[in-house]
Length: 221
Ligand code: CA
Image 1 (tube, protein in one colour):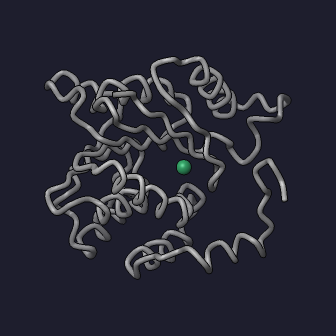
Image 2: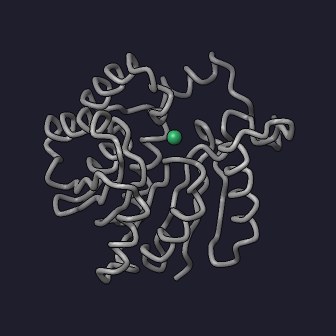
């Protein structure tokens, strides 16, 4: 037994999936299609999608935000977990990637729940704030360009209600954040983000070492 987070061998990871993953067929198909894509590693892990769906149910969420859609796996997980009148505001800049997402949202019968904004996410988030939607979201998922993580976080924090949750993806960045020789811009941005968030007394946090690292930031009631 260990009192620190266990490293997962392939064998143990496969075991974890075999005893816990309940992946709907439509998500399996989307994952298989995205696997052939050159940017396939941008897709979240299936156990992470299932975890986020659980969080959405735990929060009793009906209105959520997603910054970074890619081919739609995370938004589809969230949409399937939302009640029939639930809504996702989804931000992305890629017509090409989100065309795949839109096809799967249709196939899954949840397209009506997702309002896709094809524009730089900061513009969309600022528009939401300007239109009086501060503190109306229950949940936000940040998984886009790492240089803007703090800006996305600041706006998301205004947009979620007290008791709402922000989930920030890739905070362990394949281990590169801990390699101080790694001066890559994205690596440094995530490193700075993690350090700043630790000092941010406005939220309760936990860095969950699932997939590539998912930090949860709860806005207290
Ligand atoms: Ca990601």
